Figure 1 (tube, rainbow, N blue to C red):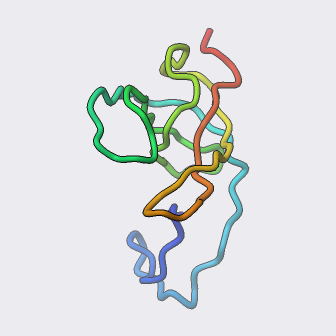
Figure 2 (spheres, helix red, strand yellow; figure 1 turned 90 degrees about the vertical axis):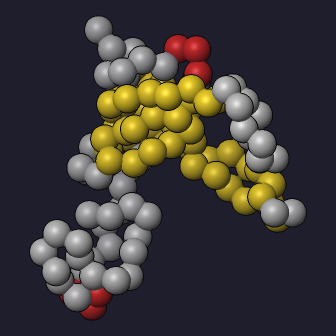
Length: 104
């Protein structure tokens, strides 16, 4: 599996693009690591913000911005959400993750 979807074949088994199948993701997963960004010069998000490596329930590891920066902990369950932002003068929906269950 690959996220975001790619069109150059499978990096693991070498299958051609026409042999790949799209697979929907629920957006639920668990935080594996966390990093807080304190300096950022972009216009679409204000520092500080936290990025997490998240293992989705379906298997892939994705990186995403967390909406709950102060409460995020490794092992917490998260779910994907979208937020409206502006990038290069265009309105876009950006993927973010929200903590749903704190680790015990």
